[in-house]
Length: 253
Image 1 (cartoon, one colour):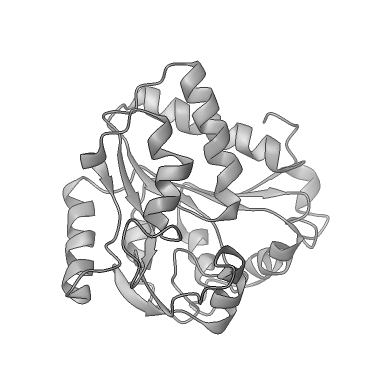
Image 2: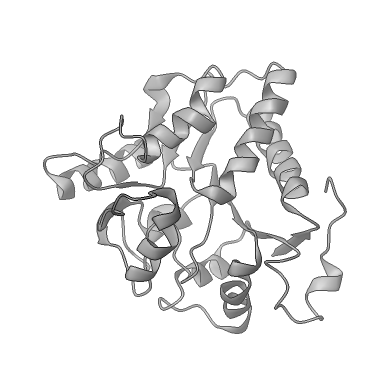
């Protein structure tokens, strides 16, 4: 389940190559898209490789994991803006196939139900990209989220808001977000979770040491038949020696 690379550059190379391979094999793939600092070098490498190879992404559909409640798609700190900046504007994505939760939906619960329903109408996610929070959240599914949850509104923990405050400078991090539920995520056919940096080492070690528990949401990935936990050396630094030597990857995969 663990793939351990020397650094973030080699992770970006591996994940980008995987994305391109899946798109070439199935041009109409449904991609579950994640955001955040971990994903930036991955998207940058993917854009670079896709442009060089003249990859057609016009038939691809995307469904984003989450969005902050209260931010509209034009807000510079929204995840809609993030996706435009780091991915959508660089390649020939069809905007009608790019799906993101609406942080300003008038009826949030109804919007969440429709988001999950739309995902199922598209046949579900083929390849889901994930990061992980320092408290083990995936998407914005905080510790204690039911494993059978669908897309829902969540009250963000103080830990998550503190972790994300670096993206907001002097502005307040929103207190709520819309997120795909745990069941939405687990129904993806393939999952790549990427964790980089020493700050992620403690939660990666907890994942290894613990059984599946809602107290550490991303432990649910132990139940997924095609989930990979992709780490750099820093994020893997607290794993026992019995794990890491067998699964280290050379640069470039």
